[in-house]
Image (cartoon, rainbow, N blue to C red):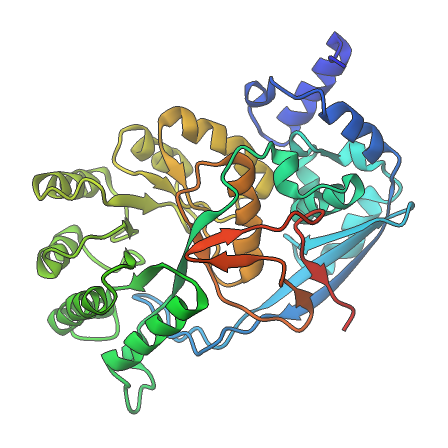
Length: 402
């Protein structure tokens, strides 16, 4: 069934309300109309907030800017229910003290007035429930989120371990050295990863500059030699100057990098220098990735358009799942790829698996190995370096009543 003019104008106004470009959704599929009718049968009836504890398999140490990360984060999630008995859940993207205010705003509203399967959230004030509404819609429609997005991507997407920090520097009173880093790499490979992201930039805060640079080079070269079939990614967390980072690249010699992430505070001049060095040294396959934390979005877009960056890293939570659905089309037009930031929790890793399977154009997913007694994530499979989202309704994760 095609939309008439009034329906189309209402549809366009809803998209504009959350700050998206209506042109990105001009090709709404006929399937979305029966989906919306089904969602209209459900009205939001309750919202419950709880905290879940995620546990990493080992202590995660320092990066170039921040101290020891610990053993895993606590995340605030919410479960929303409808008057028809359906429920969905996800990270709550707001202060949990505002839960009652959020519920009052939407209680009794048809889900179809808040959420459109072809778009995502329809109102900016629904942003705190973005992930929970995607999960709820999938449950109501009995489809995985990636099917809602169009299932244009691969069934399985490359997934790297984002957990190789400055493991050699811990514990501070008796550092374990590079052997501990190698041990942690082996643990992640045994878990199923075939790509490892190494934190570098020890000289920015934790070691003397030259000693830190030498250690970064040594760690990279040792890991590359020990695991020659593994892709290596590096992340500087803006801990270098451009000149320092080029010295690091010269130091690792013939080690090929899958990507370079945030080596320095981004400037056009520095990325031009880095791109020129990579070209001169025949490292054109190495991807440049940026945009993870509170970026100047207009500047990141400019760098992507001008070929100075290859991968957009906006965080899947703070940027928003609905916003990412819209942005992916723009990135495809630019000829660049994405890898939404997911550090901290496997919840975010799994959300991104649906973006990848639904929309494609995600070059690799940030993997964060976690266990959680309050969440069943067992349906997700990491096999030979690729993450497969489950065909279960919604995001396919179960919030347990424990």
